[in-house]
Structure formats: C-alpha cells, structure tokens
Length: 504
Image (cartoon, rainbow, N blue to C red; front, side, top):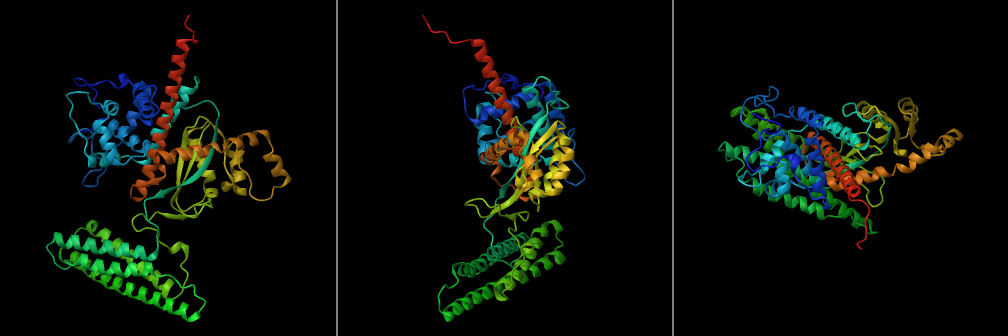
C-alpha cells in the first residue's frame, strides 16, 4: 500500500509547515525547500499536486497495468519521491549525494517527514533510483503547470489558481542541446563496444547455465582490443612521397581487415550461442533482447567499416550510429564558437516574463523551424494567457510567419537574410524591438537549467532522457517559486522593521 504522505505525525516529527529555513542562506537547498513547503502548505495547491502524485504507481509484475495503492507492501510515499527527484536535478547531483543528503541533512529529512530523534530510517541507493524512475514526462508536465500557476498567483493578486494567470504572458522561446552520456563515436570504437557487450552477455548467460563455451571470453576480448588499439594509433601519411602515402594507406587497410576478421569470428560464435540458448534452454526473449541488439549493431558497423575503409565509400549521415547504448543520440552542429559538435538532443523551452518555464519540447530528428508552430500551440493549451512570443532567426520560415500571426497577438520572429520593405517596417515596430531586446534573457534560463542538471543527461534510454528533462523543468520552477517567496518575505520583514533610525 502506497500513500502520498503519512497523514499522522510521529513522535518528535516536525510539521512541514513549521520547518524553519535560514532566510540568509544563499544556497540552492533553502530556495528549493521553501518552494516545496509552499506546495504543501497551500491547501488547494497541495490537493491538486497530491491528486497527480497518486497516479505515480509502479507497473505490475505481470505487465497488466499499474499496481494498486490499496494493497501490497508499503512503498515510498510519493511526496518523498517528489522531494528527492527535484533535489537531484536542482543540485545537479548524482544518486550517491542524494542518498547522503536524505540520510544526514536535517532540513531535508524534516521535509521528507522524519523526526529529529528516534527516527533511524535510512534510504538505500537503489530504492531512491527505482522510485524516482516512476515519474513520467506527462505527469511532470502537469505538476509543472500547477507550480507555474502558483507562482503567477503569488506575483499577481488577480490570478485564478486553477485557470492560471489572467495577465497576458509575454514569452520567449529558444532551444539548446542536452548532451547524452556517451563517448565520442567512431565506427571502430562503436564496433568494439558492440562486440565487447555481445561477448560479455554470452559469457554471463552461459555461466548461469553452467556452460563452458565462453570461459575464455576475457582472453578473446584482450586480443580484440589489441587490434582496436593498433588502428587507433595509425595515422594517415602527410608525406609528399606518393609511395610512402600509399604504403601507409595499405597498412591502415590491413589493420582494419584484421580487426573486421576478428569481429566477424566473434559475432558468428555469439550468434551460434544465441541460437543454442534459444533452442535448447528456451530462455525468455527478454533475456536475449540485449544480445540481439548488440549483434545487430555489430553487423551494421562491420558493413560500414568495410564500405568506408576498404571500398572508399562515404557513409550517408542518416545511416550513421552515434551510440549503441543511447541510440537516440544525435550529431548536432549549431555553429557555436569553440563547440564544433554536440552529442545529444535539442530541447526547446518557453519562458515567460516572470522567469517561469511554461513548456518544453524534446526535439527528435528535427530543427527549430519545424517546431515553432507546435511549440506555441502546446504552450497556449497549457497557458491560454500567452499572447506574445519571441524567437531567434533559427525558427524563421515563411510558413511560420504566417501561422504564428494567427495564434499570437505579437510575433517576434526575425527574418533570415535580406529584408523587404514590409519586413523592415515590421521589425522596426517599437513593441517588436522591445521584445526582441528582451529575448536574450532566455539564454539565462538555459544557462540556469544547465547549471542545475540539464547540461548532460546521465539517465538511459529516450524515456529516461525525457523524464530527466521534465524533472529539471519542475525543479527549476519550484526553486524559482521558492526564491520569489523568500524575496517577498524579506520585503515584508523590512517593511515591518521600518526605516533605520540612528541610535541617539
């Protein structure tokens, strides 16, 4: 049985509303905890967020939907999962640090619902990992809407906490690359990865079944790695002598042929093992899925190396693989100074004038100009008060200009290239100029997200990537809410204190 939070306080436990945070602290943790405290203490907001958290349940073991929150063992309360999840992203911390903070940090333990004494509960590393992974991007997006509406409500007295702000929102949109946790890809090191994992998987499966076919797998890998390292050290000749250049080229081809021959032998042996395991021992398909994937990648990469090195063919970009572990990784070149290429996925964000991030979109195999219209549509679905949005030139296309005019009162979308007289008049409008000057503030939001965890995604898979990005947006907005509350409370304290009077 899993609950959002334990309703009954234990002996020595501090109510979340009564947690005292240091108002002078400039660290990120008090800001984040103040935002979480507000979510808990505002009754209507807490009910809406708790209703959403109740949907976060693990899958059933038989694959038939979600488990019930009425029966079974007590799991980690969803409120605790939210606290630990946003802490991880806000602090740009790994799970080891989150475990240490959850077990030792006084204020965080109070926010998690533990007493200062007589409570020796400790969080295990794997428990934190498994529970944070229960979040889904859709659930986090809906929680984010509640957090942003709460922030707008604190800033404006005429804001409806359910329907959102009644003030026109003037937003700015931009995209950045969130890197995936991969090494720089070449076809030879990707082939090494594929063969290495295939052999290791075969060895583990055979050992579990008391088979001795791959007892020398470590020896085979050492020999295969020597061939890989040899190719790494070989460089193309820059000599003016044609014979020397040709000799070096022949040496490179011979090394690649040896490398491919070894890879083909190991792949064929692994395929034979796979068929034997499937036919004789009848293993479940899920246990062999990883092995099938590694063998498929190995065959694909061997073919590409033959075509590139031995046949002199140029491999089309669409056929290239950039990671066998994170296959969603893209090769992105945005023309930044000193950053020729980035490995990851583009993420577009929309920020309002209050520095809340209203919406984000993970861009798979697409560019800025292809998502401008859908980005506005999805943002307005969540926040109908959005009336203006600014973009940079990367989002421009004639179709976008026409479509966005139908959706927004003010569209700040500079045109690429030479401007016509009509374009000059449009871009000279005072409102256009004012919002365009303010557009660069979105870079501050992108930088803040990068500092607070969204520079590189350590989670695996496309689902893990989307969950990580969505959790980063929620964490950033909760921290922003906490910063606003602390500033307002400081202003109220200053007002009550009155003007400074010099002592007589």
